[in-house]
Image (cartoon, rainbow, N blue to C red; front, side, top):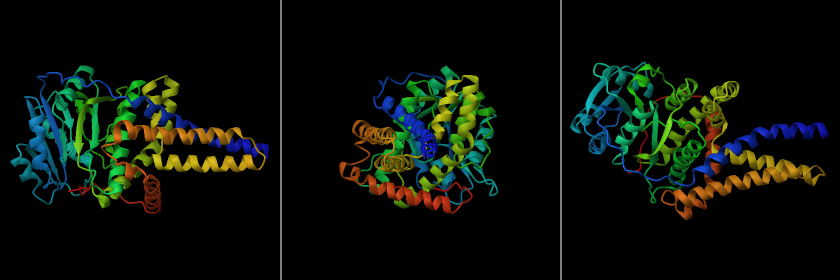
Length: 392
């Protein structure tokens, strides 16, 4: 019996490590940083906009991008495998357009590679990737460009969904979860010297760095994989909190599709790259690599909370049957800490994203997520780049 309890205790340690990583990022990321004015820049900037069937959003987005950008900025929309008027609408918005029809190469990575090839004839100093349905806040493009050029490193903006208090509970909670992941945890990791995760939109690269990367992949989380590649190459991306890029949240059906793609892709990438990256970081004493490896081990919050609850119930039962009490107490403290930090993140930064009434429905959201993970586990689908339907 003692040996079995020891083995059970050892099996619980990875979950405790995951809890510590998540808690550290959230706790350190609760406080916002000063919002300085955007630094002036005369750099030649290219906004690279990969687009697949975005005729309804791309014109307004391009107009907003141009209005928020400093002089000497061009907007290049890559109309990738489009069957609608994406190219025409982008042109009407004032963008340059590169049409790319390659039905056998589906994915955002191929669109980025095609855009890079189009820019190579007259390369900019910095490339900023921004999705076709996104709008940067004024000053954000200049801030991203200045930071990327000053440091020589990829730089990630705060990529967030606009608050929609009239949206369904699933959409509101998903938007809040994105805020925790893309702002609070990114900010916390930065404060201990960890690298930023590249999140797909609002990513700035010095041209030489962007030109050297292998972008032409069908990976559905190509941004995550690219960030890991940069960390492994000794060029960890930076998080730039002062730059904000907004997107409209998807509707309920789109949220389920989007979450299945993102989280299924994240778990697959993390399973493949997390432990090797952590091991290399420890062997070479490279802190950004260590923390990125640890970050990749953190499962989506729903799974972390469910795993903690299951471990606590196990150790509580063991203690009732006469076993040690300490593991149950440690598990209870870990679970309570995670819940308290999520509530603190809502109180500090998430009130606009998530109404108090919807906050009370978080347990139902956890059940929805578990059902989603069950569907992901049951069927393996070839990743595809599809347009997500947004809340009107």
